[in-house]
Amino acid sequence: MRKLFAAFLCIIMLFLGGCTKEEQSVSGTPEDNLIVVGFSQVGAESEWRVANTESMKSALSEENGYMLIFDNARQEQENQIRAIRMFIQQGVDYIVFSPNVETGWNSILLEAKEADIPVIVIDRYIEQQDRDLFTAFIGADFYKEGEIAANWLADFLKKRGRSEEPIRIVHIQGTIGSSAQIGRTAALEEAVRRHPNWEIVAQECGDFTRAKSYEVMSSILKQTKDIDVVYCENDGEALGAIDAMEEAGLQCDPYSGVIVISFDATRLGLEYTLARKIALNVECNPLQGPYVDETIKKLERGEPIERIRYIDETYFDFTSITREIIDSRKY
Ligand code: GZL
Image 1 (cartoon, protein in one colour):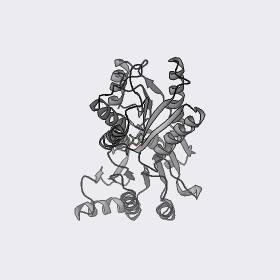
Image 2: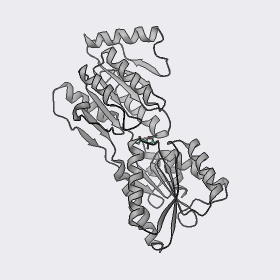
Image 3: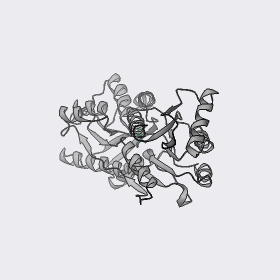
Image 4: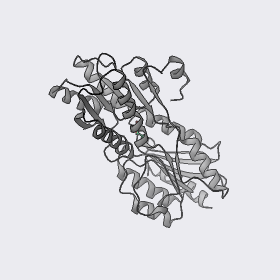
């Protein structure tokens, strides 16, 4: 009955223009047996995010037994809170969201708990006081991703006989307060503490976008071009930083120029890795839809689930990446 009520409400909301088409779409026809899921997505800021959305939409499809209500929050937390509240009013069966930032979720998740709607957090983590505010987390271990990058850099510099020389690092951070930024930043800062010859000479927010990263890197280059490493917290930022460096006459190459480190390992980022413009690309798997589908189906059957599930990830550097690997990638 709850599903029918939700479906009826969705149609009314759409009809009355309660949600604009590009922000909210309803897939599937209201039928008793469809599982109604409200999904609040961070935005569409990067290739990674687009792949994440596609994975969720194809897994939570009508063919798989779902009616999906999708909302694009355009990287604004208040839009996500508004969408989650709407999902609660619509009486959906599950709420799924990728939290733009880690904090500020307790009260809306308490509303979901009081409405007895299970919440599945994907991609980024939330800081929560009450352990029961979400049913499951499916995503990445961002600190571990950063550790992979820092350890790779230390090994590479050692092989090049540069373990003792001063290493000047520009750090382009992701959306401040997001768990992806918090984890990847903490790992780099810990590595800098371990390597006294490493120095972060500039640390700016690129907000996970190519445009913002180009802008902040261009202004850094006005202050200094004496840079050994640029550590970017996703591919979009790496491409923006590379655009700015090449415009300023710097070469991005691990042997003869600036060592660029990136995260996500999207197809576009791996093309740059194959071209040696990105030296290292740490994978962050956006294909989380099937894991969410599996978790919801288990909950529907009353089976036990893993509350915290980190998705396996790897990394590619300019020596290991190949055309075949890129062509075989799903995103
Ligand atoms: C990581 C994800 C980050 C990606 C960025 O799980 O939250 O957000 O690294 C995306 O590309 O914008």
